[in-house]
Every structure is written in structure tokens, then in C-alpha cells.
Length: 328
Image (cartoon, rainbow, N blue to C red; front, side, top):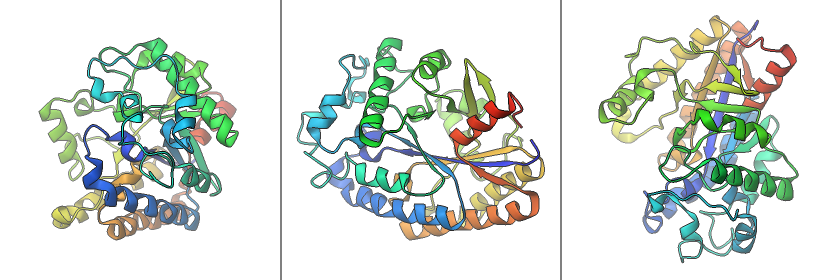
């Protein structure tokens, strides 16, 4: 490529992504703040001409419980840990009847705002926040999940989803062919670093430390995007760890780390793939929106100086198809 690419993907899930971890009765304010922040993020994306991919849980497309149930597949994930199957919540009093009464589990109005914003790609985070490496689930169940995601997207918004982000970053190489057969052309993968290859405590601690210091000694964009089974694999480079008051003194280190990586990608015509969850802005929302704007301002500097350009995941796949493998 003759220019670097600034890729942003967001895992849009609200309570569905953390249902077994977050007590909704204690976190309603958090998710309400999340919803309020999304139009503000879209406004910033418009201001700085940012193209982004919103990988959205299929459950959020539904307008009410009846619609959610009608699009659910018959073949559901049979996780050994049944707390991970959020279908078990639908008939409980945790999930309300519609978006008005339950803005934590339905979001068609927000999805519509995303689609009405220039440069934004609506993508899949699977239908039911499907865990692709958990014991008990299988390929047939994953296939049924993606089919439901595509059905509800086409029925509600007349869109075929082209990009996919695996929930909890549970990337499963064996599932790429299933993704491709369901219309997916690009997938986000994990960074190619030793501490992203497992969930052991020392790996998790290393991932945390790497947010502040370059402990892996790697450059952004080192692992190139490439195609497998007709699907473009786009490695993530950095999780945008949100601003936290408890980490106020370390915030400058986080920002400096991201700027260093962005500049390296821009100077060397590489990709820089930044990702986060919209709900990460649920606390300290004002500070996190300012943090994001500071990053986007720096992107504008790199765009002017190095022709660094903003891409959605789908646009990366489209460019790859046009150039027939000329990636990075």
C-alpha cells in the first residue's frame, strides 16, 4: 500500500456482552450513560471523517421480545457453562418487553443512528454474543447463530453483514469457512503476541502492562492483514482502555503509547487497528469522549503529514478484493 490505514472497530453489545458478570440492577446508570455516549461518538467520527465498524450483537436489532424470539435459531449453543447462554435470560424478568422499557437489551434506534452516519459499517458480533471456543458448542450451532444475525439484519435494516468480530475475542480458525458461507468477508483477529494466546494470569497481567509500556517490543501493524478461506483477517493492535480516575496518573502513558503506535503505522504504510466497547465509556464519559477526541485529533495530524487514512473493516476487505492480495 502507499498509505497506512487507521481501522476502528467497536464491540456493540450493551448488557448482552457482560450479562453473567454485571448485575443489571446495579449498573443501569452505566448502560444509560453508554447509550447517551454513542451519538456523541458518532458526532466525533463525523467531525474527523472517521470510518468505523460497529460489530453489533444481533439481539440488539430486535424491537421487542416477540421479535427477538422469532429470529432466534432452533439450534442454540449448548455450552457446558450454561450461564453463557443468554437465551436463558429472555424468559426471565431481566429482559423487558421492548426498547422503551428495557434500553439495556434492545437498541434498534441506536443502530439506525449508526447507519445514518457517514462512513459507519454495521457488522456482526454474532446473534447471541456467541462464544466460539467454549466447551459444548459446535460448528452447526455457530452456523445457525450467524444465519439468525443475517436474517434480522436484512429484515430490520435491509443490510447483509460483511464483517465479524468474535465475542470475547474467542477467535476460532476452524469457523472461518462457516463465516464466509454466511456472507462474511472480514474478521478481526487477536494481536500476534504471546500474551494474547491464552487466558492464564501472567498473560492477562502482561496484556495490562502492555497498555502502558512496550513490553512485547513490537511495532504496530507488524502482523499483516491477509486472506484465509476467502475472508480477510485484520489483526487488532490496541484495545482502547478507557480513562479511569484511579489510573489518572498513568493516563498520559496510555495516550503516548497509542500515539507512538499510530505514528509508526502512518510512517511505514501499515494498518493500525484500534478497538473498544461502547460501554467502556459508561463511566467517566466526559473524560473518555475527550480522550477519544484527542486520539482523533492526532489522527488528523498523521493524515495531513503521512496520508494516513481511516477505514472500516469492510472497506479494508473491499480494497483487498480490488487489489487482489495487495495488503499492506
